[in-house]
Image (tube, rainbow, N blue to C red):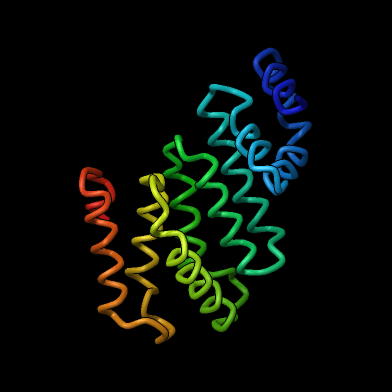
Length: 176
């Protein structure tokens, strides 16, 4: 009810959203799937939803307790904001994975990339993943799928071919 009320208040006075950003982030981490989805549904305003998703990314970058947590949080953002074209969020995620956390720690950056590959291998077979998220997954597989030596090039190529076959009608995914 609180999220619904916030959604209605936002239509009247958008600045209310700023005052309740942390509450929205807390709702995204709640184990209740319905609450998570409702968090992205307070408004029909896609700009606002994209703002929430972008803010989740920013806060996750700043306060991530671990690489694995960060990747899982990003997966949730894409999962729950599936109807949005989160191109900016996707670009920022890919940039972070490519550049790392900027601490001149190659080991931590490699671990971040390996965590991303592992996570995406687990979820790649889920039905109806958003196109933008699939583009991120394909890019990560292409750039870092074999980097740690755990997976062969033929295995990663097979996964990419599976994605292309499953989403053969999606031009954006095929181009990835």
